[in-house]
Length: 258
Image (cartoon, rainbow, N blue to C red; front, side, top):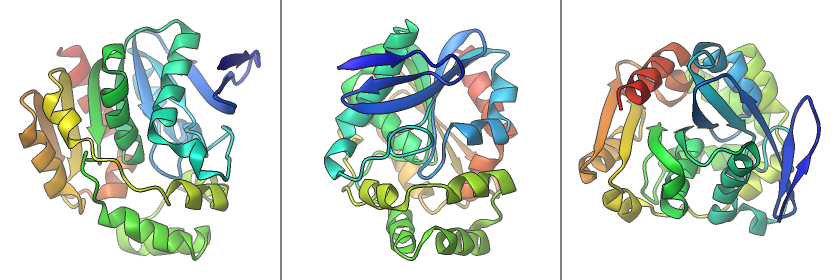
């Protein structure tokens, strides 16, 4: 069941008993944006994704359940893949948006595959950043191991190995509910490779040249008759997400070129 909170500043819905926080800004074709693991709506603003895209698209920004200002249950049953996918559809329904483009990065890309699987009729295209459809992710395993040592330790190790977080992004990240994060990351990955292979719509992959999942993303692109790929030189997984100008340019060119 979905109900609406009438907060004029930061709207939210209740979908299957969980409050989902969202924003809708800008004008143009609707573009759903799904953030990475541990991030939130605020990071789209801090990294200037919104400043660069809101002139061209209606941006639908969603705090995934467990993140940002959405509810953060500690019960693993609230984080089933189809439930998470249904949150996006509930937000779109509330906004009166039947079809949209979808961009997800990292975990957000995984969630985009879930939307491709369960609700393909609601999307004109999928842009998948730093993610692939296979049920394997060594980076996620390392992430979970570090989570067990606490959020400051995770950030410290990631910064030493992959580059510094922007200060405001780091501040937002350290505000995560650690128990909720551990619960979310305890779930096994769902394999969406068959979904991708059978999808005939518009798909674009974006991945950094130094991202450890590069070969999986290339394999995914090759498995799809309709997908294209952009490999960004010299960028690792984190650096690419923080490079908003490169990603927003690719998003704009891909969507407006359809």
